Image (cartoon, rainbow, N blue to C red; front, top):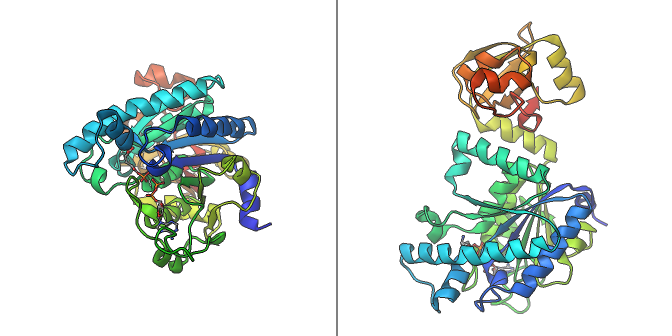
Length: 374
Ligand SMILES: Nc1ncnc2c1ncn2[C@@H]1O[C@H](COP(=O)(O)OP(=O)(O)O)[C@@H](O)[C@H]1O
Ligand SMILES: N[C@@H](CCC(=O)OP(=O)(O)O)C(=O)O
């Protein structure tokens, strides 16, 4: 068995993306029987200790069906209207099915801006993390009502990869209407063969990957690109057919199903580079000895109590350099509080944050998931 597939067996957090072509049974309205089967599998994944964020397309396609449109309109406002109608059907289907497993779902609608704006990024991250911690399955789609460019050119493969970055998933699973990535588009070339495993960075993949079908947006081209994006935070990607029996469970069990794309770099290195390369440092935090030890030796988050002083000019979500009292750099990380708030809570136990600031944010000043040791 390949090393990459072995890794999947040990993974703990997945982003599962279900594409339009698959979800709507090629334009026949939502495939409710298939949704029920995927939900059963996700419930089983959760039972085996894997947290799942679901990224589901299909709102435009379902909206078109509900509104009786057979052709995808060109006008953005019509697409947005269809998405708003269809999203109701989507969440209803997931909610009803997950309820059979006593599992709550949560609707998360994101735009690309939520990823590029630091504050919104951290808020989305904190919410998703909290939901996962509570055993809820977040159901994510693009916020089609407010995006313009994205609804025309956007695809949920990219959104899935950004969500994988956001929650630091171990794996991004792209379920589609083909068995995986073929050497050429099988709809055009019947001699095309399935690629079982490849390096994410292999440029040959880009040449093989073509556009999408009538309902889907991006085809394989965006899936290969999504795999590269997801690799930035260390995730492997699997492209597989959502129509295969128990496909998610078979992926978990490291069966050779679909196409596995494995990043060249180890997840840790990718993650470090991603945080380090993410932003310029905007400030400094100086830690006491105990906090330095907690970070370095025990892999802990940084709590305000262990911070001696703060300086610079940073807002929530920005990168800070974390040093010891001799000025030696200990780590870099994304800070949960802006300078003014941080100044007021350092040296204090986290339980006092609310009374000092008048609101309760995170108990950590820098969460360990957002922290890279030097
Ligand atoms: N090399 C390839 N291997 C497999 N499928 C391909 C390839 N190139 C293009 N495709 C097309 O990509 C489609 C899947 O993408 P898309 O229609 O966007 O679906 P989804 O909604 O699941 O994202 C397939 O139906 C297939 O025709
Ligand atoms: N957000 C929209 C469009 C996304 C979309 O179709 O993407 P994809 O499944 O990648 O082809 C929707 O839910 O219909």
